[in-house]
Length: 314
Ligand SMILES: Cc1ncc(COP(=O)(O)O)c(C=O)c1O
Image 1 (cartoon, rainbow, N blue to C red):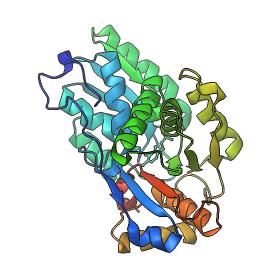
Image 2: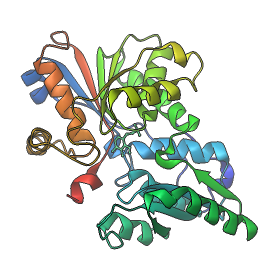
Image 3: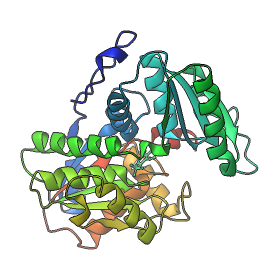
Image 4: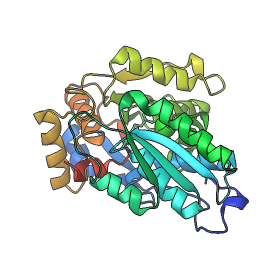
């Protein structure tokens, strides 16, 4: 369990995360010829937070945030990380400022994610992607000059603490499963979640094949990002990384018909996926299984990282 610091708790019930459920999905597994389990980080007890909540709880704990501190972070207008920062910030009594980058020609000020962030009390700054750094610096200076303690957290919580949170999540999986899975598949973006899982499994002596399915980046860039994040962990630089870019469709936020079909079918079977993250990853898992990439009856874990909001804004 990841604890938040004592100082942060007076105004809040946030003090730890329970394990997320690990569910057998035999109907889909049988069809794919594997033993399929789904690790439901989408069901962690923070609505619509997914993998971001593990990273942020650890990050805020490491920083020993206190009620009244200012938290500044950034992401796209649909950013799961930013909305989760607003949610945790509200629970912890932090003053949250979100610098959200917009996309040309899209009216974003009243979208559901932005409205939710505002409802959680966050100040939302909508900026052009090229102005993100300058606006963060400006807000940091304004708030620090006013006497606040300011925490600037990188987009996606792409930090050492974020990686450490997922190394611990791997240990949580091993506790639940009782043995190492043969394969673990997940949606990979900045790569911190993948790096943490790889590090945690390696630390436990497992030979699990961890397959990161890129949601946007080409393999060279995305794989390098995972390797860099892995190098933040002791001995991590030596561990091989598998990062596939065959399922990115047209890039971030673009989903092919095949990905949409996967999402539609999974919902029909009771597994909520989204077209931006988990739909691509699950399509990767099914296509790899169909192509014989996994040994027969292999134990395959699909790590569900969330993304329901990305489905809701479709
Ligand atoms: C739902 C969801 N899944 C997966 C990811 C990818 O996580 P990471 O950036 O740690 O690779 C993200 C990141 O934005 C996400 O929001």
